[in-house]
Length: 355
Image (cartoon, rainbow, N blue to C red; front, side):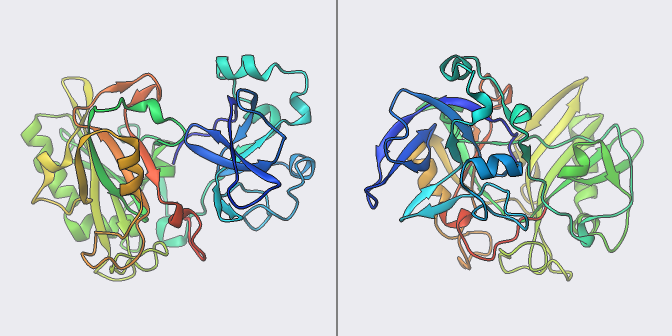
């Protein structure tokens, strides 16, 4: 999940092909449906991204009462309006009437707190919850930004790798070599340096034990001469999320696929290629493409059918984009890594969004 930032953005406005009274305001590669004539290309406005939770006063001001997602109708979600995908909200809130939005856009000012906007936190089902303990040695996962919001994370032609993004639940495992200690956590708990105590009923521990992830981590730790090794994977199947890939998370056939590896070696944390280190050791997320970065190609791969089951059972959630050689990104302020999500996934009916 990406970080929440509510910022002013300079817009590019396009015609709406199916509605005379609407237009499309573009932010990055996102487009949000707006009233015709409300904004002009080159002007600045506030962009509220998907998964934002809005306060009631702002919802009423924007005329969105009863029109947003969630049980309280207060969450921003992608929708199709007159056939066009609308992602996020473009607006000029009254609370920012005295703000120079063009200057704020140039400075990257975040207005989330001032507007009372928070980030939606997915619910945690009982099978993914459990008793936790402090785990300062746990290696956490990182937030991944959407390439459509920040298309300049990669440069055209840069060698990249695209892997399929699975709709399951992220499972974090850290193996501490000298202590022969295993920590298992979810993305949410991991961000707080908390680990789940072992419980045979817990989804993550079932996946770790069922697929031998801890043993693979111990072998890898020894091979690398590392103090700690982190293996990050997706647990999936029926009972986990609505997209199952032919697996059943309620039984021994629950799915697991590793998507990233980190290791602390000589005091430095490194992100490593799971294919080079774990191929044949653990199930891995499918690698869909290796080659020069092209945003149109990325968006094309983000859509289509899933390849995990080998049967194309349902739509694909999207893809994760990484450089062929791990590097820092000034855009993200950390790893150069991003995601692209399928429009069909965003607008599907009856979808689940658990942690």
